[in-house]
Image (tube, rainbow, N blue to C red; front, side, top):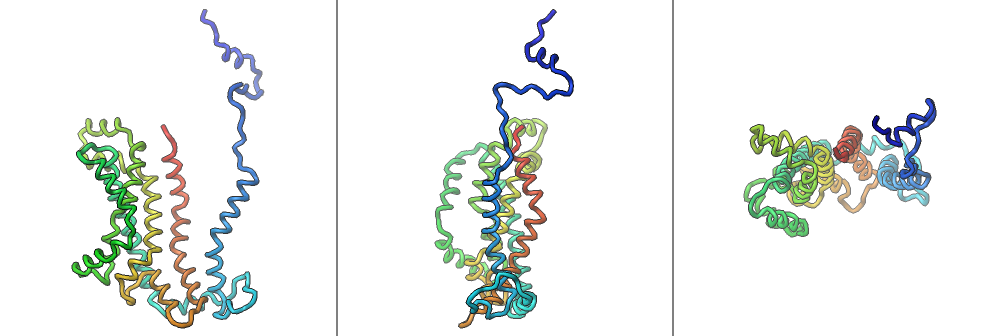
Length: 300
């Protein structure tokens, strides 16, 4: 008769209804966050939301709110009035539409091309892959301002100055996106899975679409969201290449404060409105984004 292991005998002797015996080498760890963690998170939340609240606070009062000795701490009743003035002063609806079009198109294009290039650098073997990757990463050290004049000359020769193409085409792929997706796909896609797809007869693009793209969804969601935010808040290049009659949101906000006297209630009301699409995007995609991150963090 075979001998029964010691841990099985301990489990057999344990009465029903009693808690299971703990392993002597694994002490129980309390993983619940404490007061310090909640305090830091609360302070971070308040500090992050303070600029948005200040914009809404000033935008909801009259134009002389900042001339008072003690600024108010509660919102007033002039926000919609100031918002209407902002939409009448500049083409704000057109600016919102332009920013949504440019940000959504650029973010989607960056995710697609960066995932494609990142997959090539991570899983395909070709001559010169390492020097090319080093060159792509090295371009991150070049300031954006150095390429403004050559880029403007190219856009002028193509006849795109003043149109949305001048904002969309130069931002369709980024070096950071390529490097970010390459670093993620190196470990997220096993080589055995790619070999199995090739054995089944999948082409290179079919393997990319059916194997790499599903595995890259968590990183792609993060990259899409960050690219959308960066494009939405971009100010320097749209200021150079777009006219005042065809602005983006940031250019429209700059037009609100032109002149000798700056109406901060008007400007900050427009600033508060410009953050509504970003907040809506976070509310709609926040749960899916966190779920994708957690799914990508689980290792099989």
